[in-house]
Image (cartoon, helix red, strand yellow):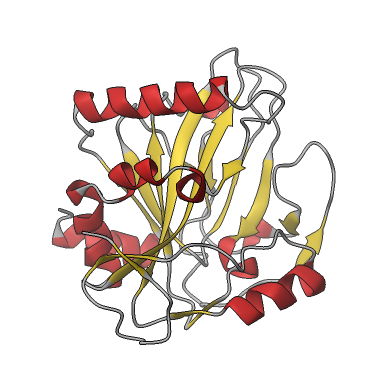
Amino acid sequence: MLSAQEVQSYAQDGQITYGTELPETTLARIHERVDKLLATSPGVSPDYIPNLIEQDSRWLEFATLPEILDVVAQVLGEDIILWGSALFCKSATGGKATPWHQDAQYWPIRPLETCTVWIAFDPSTPENGCLRVIPGSHQDRKIYPHHVDDSDALILNQVLQGAESRGEPPRDVVLRPGMFSIHDAYLVHSAEANNSGRRRGGLTFRYMPATSYFDRDLATRQVKELGVVDISQRQLHLVRGVDRCGRNDVFLDD
């Protein structure tokens, strides 16, 4: 669990690192699952592989770890829906950069209250392209103007200009294997390309409070209006509590 001071830091900065590492047995299972996925996905860039749970429901094991859900509950409340999962695994060389952006730019959740948990299974450092954040850039609860950049050098095509003027100086989120970070949807963040010679791998799981609504019609419109990937068919898993909104078509996970 986060301390009261850490919860306050999350509210102030929009990001917090959970310092205690996941058990070695859990980390070993993550490595095994990742290795199998990469071995059976020839020709697929490991930089970004979305929809892990839609491909294989066994990924729910890691998304529903009590250590993670207890922390998510402290920032979102006790009623939690898991709505996204992905692998970000930057190769040792020749990787792509993630530009400065806000996740809120293209997420069809209303009210837009959601967070991302980023679990490191490799060391994540400035040298190999760790997550970078602008602390405090989430506080206005505004989506800043983005433009589309379809460059092959970028993982995402939504780019925020003037990012470093939106809050405090950029901060690197350095993680040991088994540690995880949690950040707010409005937080401005990025990651440099990896040319360090060391792989940088992490799992991401996206959570929203069950008082919010995942608007599939809005998701479809965003594809046309923003040129983003279609996420209108994402699975919604109620991983804790009840669907307070009452409009979400959720899977009930024990």
